[in-house]
Each structure stands twice: as structure tokens, then as C-alpha cells.
Length: 146
Image (tube, rainbow, N blue to C red; front, side, top):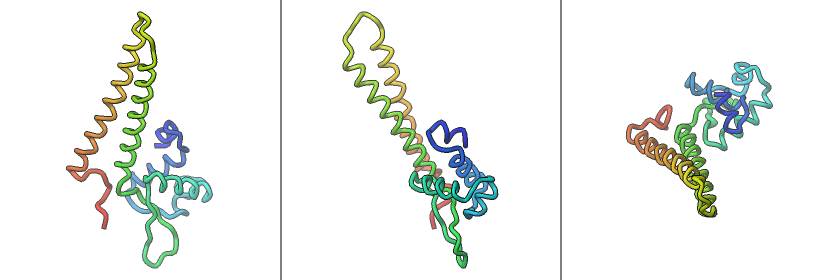
């Protein structure tokens, strides 16, 4: 998860937090995350804030405990897939704009670029289809919201 997060421009710590919460399936406090991952509380604080904004994790409370706890968001998978689909669609649109601006020059450049756009558009459509199917089978959250 750390390597995956880095490839998407996030910190490795963000990926490790997601991995731990996803794997264990239980809420972790700031302190527990810092201890388990061997990083500072400051690093946990900045990364959890970012992950909450991204919709990957959520803050939860435990009765009688004043600490903040974090768990995988009920919509984490949907958020991740939605972001990936948007990125693929955006790339397809950018490539299509380039194709539209190119002059025919007797090479197969435009055809190669069209193929690139079709690839990205197809992946975006495939992800949209996967999201629909996952919703049908209620597979988008780690657990149903209370």
C-alpha cells in the first residue's frame, strides 16, 4: 500500500495507514498508529488529515475515550475507484485534444494517439461498470454504516 500510495503522489505513510486499517479492520488511535507504524504522531496527524479529505479513512469515537480513532471509510473503495476513473477519463480527453489539433502528416501518429485515448477511455468505462456491479452486491464498504 505504501508503494501504491507513492505512485499516486501520496506519502508512503499514508499508504501504510490505509494498509493497516484495511488489513486489521478495526479503529486505531493516533498513538496506536504511531506505535504500530513506527512514525511520529505529527506524521500520523498530517497523513490522517489528508486521508480523511480524500475520503479514504474516517474519524470515529469510542464511548468514554477522548482520543481520536480512525478506520477505513465506508466509501473508501468507491473513492479510490472514482479517483482512478476520473484520472483515466482526464487523460483520454487530453490525448483526444492533441489528436484533434494534429495535422495529417502521412504518419500513423494520430492513429497511435487515438489508440491511447481509446485505452484510457475504456479503462474509465470499465471502472464505472465495476463500481455499478460493486454497488449491486454492496461491496463498496468494509462494513455497512450504522
